[in-house]
Amino acid sequence: MKKKFLCLLTLYALFSCSDPIEPSLEQDAENFELFDFDNGQSNEEFILGLEVIGDKLFFLHTNFPGFIDKQHRAAPLCCLTSDLNNRFKPSFTENYIIHPIEDLNGLVVFPVVPGELRTIIFDELLGDEWKGARLVTGFQKEHFHSEKNFDLNGNHLILNLQKDGNLAILILEINFGTGFHQLELKQVTEIGNLGLESHSNSGLIIQSIKKYEDRWIAHIRSTGNGMGEGNSYLISKDGGTEKLPGPTLGSTNFRFYDFAKLGPQEYLITESPIGRISYGSSPVSENKAYITEINGPLVIRSDGQKGLIFIPGTNVIASIENFRENGISNHQLKQLDNTGIANDQIYDAQFFENKVYIATKSGLFVKSQENFWEEIRLP
Image 1 (tube, one colour):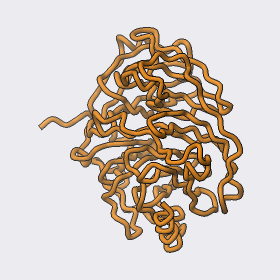
Image 2 (image 1 turned 60 degrees about the horizontal axis):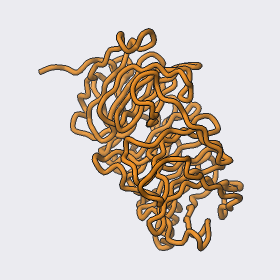
Image 3 (image 1 turned 180 degrees about the vertical axis):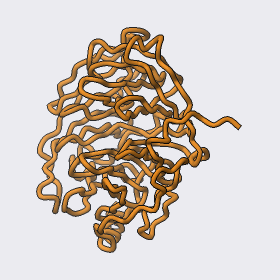
Image 4 (image 1 turned 120 degrees about the horizontal axis):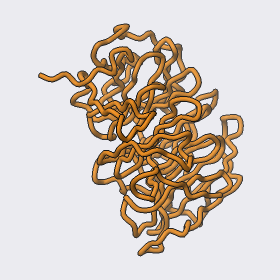
């Protein structure tokens, strides 16, 4: 592992932050266009994730992190990489982007603010009790869906570790310091069994997780249960948990996957493996109105009016509209035109400054938001 980390540091020394690169895109492109990073790296590589934070769109390319500014110019951050595991979705914060190392025994910590590239190696940080620990993986094998079982929220990192066949959910409070030098572990909290029934006592699996304000929402199941079992919980940084209710119709089990904020107290929420979609004042509300369901985990995004949905690892994108009043009867689903990305696997998407950015296995694609909501063109 240390040899691989030295490789990362060598690349870091050769690649530092630079001024934003002018975009080379049509102002109102009718089709999706490949975004040109123009930094000597291949544009046609895996884009592992996207996140809008403040006035920037952050991304993690398989070879480097960076951001896109309001003028749609790309600026690489800090360092080249060559050892990231592409089965996972990265975690973005205003200070750091973190992502698993290829062999899953740690995380790379990319600085967004001035700082240096660092790593969190689990057995080095946690001690002998966790020697040989790895991130849990392999529970999304039916399709190539990105795994979502760790997340950084402020200076608290929640993650799902496995060691010797036993699985655990830990919350690590970390002192990141000034952005330089070694990270320091302040406290470790382990999530209990949550009262979930299981045929196995070997631990808990995070099916999906996402930040919600200063806490997390997670779908958790026991190792002896299927992917559609378990429940969803609101998790506090101190390890406190609260079981969350599901929508008004359908299964009483709430199997959280994603949410999109449309406006103040207005959210669309999706579940997995059955892609139930609901609408409510918050993802943790007791009154989530059922809209519809689609077979598969659904990533959901919104421009504030409509919802964009897709199953990660596929090339089909769709809109959901007219869901606010009596959504179960009035909603409309429309397959959207994907010309330009029809042969790509989609993994993330974000609306940013009147454009839509799509992260795929073959690069980052962009299209004018004005032209985005067009239905698929029939031959």
